[in-house]
Image (cartoon, rainbow, N blue to C red; front, top):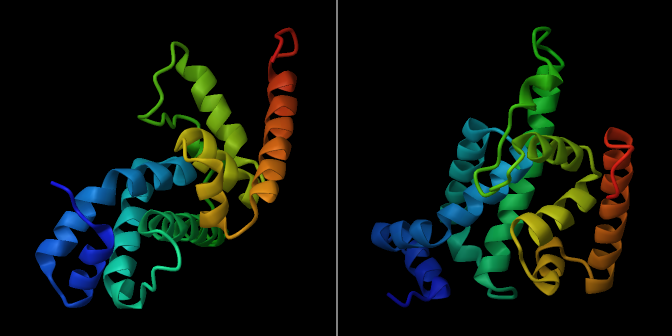
Length: 185
């Protein structure tokens, strides 16, 4: 089935539930995986995914095609993911029994690695990056998007994305070298 995402959005704006279902099927996996890369928790990623599609349903009429639908969906997902994490951190200030270490058992389902411990450690380090570096890194290397699309999603230049990726890799390399001092990284 060859589906035009822009046409689906205009049908969603007209409250066509079938179009919304098709749109969801088209983007659900991408949205969930991106949210999961940020939240590192299945339930949180599901919550962000639901929030993203609620926003898409409500904002479908406002889509102006200034960017590709794919870019628009990723931008919403990234923003909702970052906002979710900020909100969760604010809420945890009031919960004394919360520990930051609850995320140490996270395993991204897209990763097939021989050593799952390395994957867990890498995602912990990715989580510690500055938001823009983390976004550029996740979209480029976890979601495997072209750099220009990452720039479009983030609303910055291609050169800025490359700079963010260089800093992210440098920061990750530094953290990995501290954890594995005798390995060449």
